Amino acid sequence: MEYTQSYFSISPGSTLVAFVTVVFLLYRAWPHLYQHKETSKLADPIVTHQEPGLVVSKEPEVPEGWWSGRDVFELERRALFSQAWIYLAHISQFNKPGAYQSFDFAGYPIFLIRGKDDKIRAFHNVCRHRAYTITRKESGASTVLGCRYHGWSYDTNGRLVKAPQFDDVPGFDKSQNSLFEIHTRTTNHGLVFVNLNAGEPEPFDEMIVSSLDAFSYTSGLEAKSSWVNGQTLTGEFNWKVGMGKRQLHTFTRELARRVSELSGPSPVLKAIRSFMQKSTRTETSLSPSTFLCSFEHTGLCLALSIFPASEKRSNIRYDLFARSAASKTEVEALSKASYDVTENLVREFEGDYRAILTKHGNSIDADLNKTDTRQILSRLQEHTKLEKIQGSQILPATRKPKGSTLFQQAEQLCKELDCVSRGSQDGSSSNSLDW
Image (tube, rainbow, N blue to C red):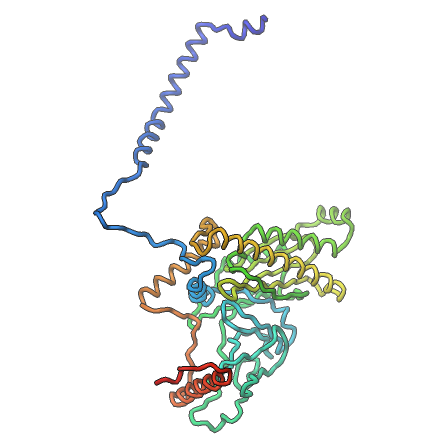
């Protein structure tokens, strides 16, 4: 009771001190309150007067058909996939001259091959004669690659070395009929990038190099790392769905758990080792659609790339690398774990894509706060502006054949006759020869 009375008793001196304090605080706060009031006035919406019947429309920031439109996909091919540096493989996947890997992303069939000089080169996977496929398997090895249609053959440098019945054709020059080579860049870490631009490619981003340096330092990935296993899976979803960080986090966490179970020792020893050694767990993203990650104290790294096959279908390619060669038993176990977890990821992407189409259909709704989305949009918008200025589509990856005019005209006629012949066999018709 005495404590309560003394607590609530107020002296005249304390009242004066409190009053002076309040006045002082109001004096200090007044300029800020006044400034806030003025700012609030300035923040009021500006009312504009508009002439009757005059409607000003703003072009949507995200193009219509963002998730499933064919026009958007074709724009992405022109603006992004034919101009950006794309990661495709690691040099450990090419163990001898003639070893090759085939890819098909955004409708561009290409292949990488190791030459006799040990350099990795990239080429469009089409024969210069009738544009038939050169490499038919996803991977293989051959120092001479032949087209099965008319027997044209090329070496590992893409040079035409054999063209049956063409040696005496007027105007025909083997040196002008090599495979179309693609710009490549192999980093110090052994990662191979390509750029499909037929002209001068954009500079290789030094930020990518810095990011890979940091990743390599922590994960241990380097040029002499070993390829363990890899595979390509196909899913029914738009490739941009695959940029979801939530799904990738779940994927890496589950795969890390499976890898940890396969790579003993006991949990106690693992805990001791993780305490004594520096962490080797890290991850990074490579625009536009590649994800790299490593696993704690295993010496393993994973590369996961999502390539569009069409506006509604994507290919997921995963490759697992190790600091040293793995045994056959380890490879089989790791292969199964990688495939199972990646297959689950594909199914998750497909479910998310169905949910997006159900909720938004083909609307322009997209998460503009995502950095990846902003980067893609920026490229599409810049390319669209250039096409509007030019008045036609700009196709950076398009190649123009070289050689004599007479031979090119004869070749074009043969190609059209060939198309008609194939069309008549299956009952279809062609108007390609209409003059």
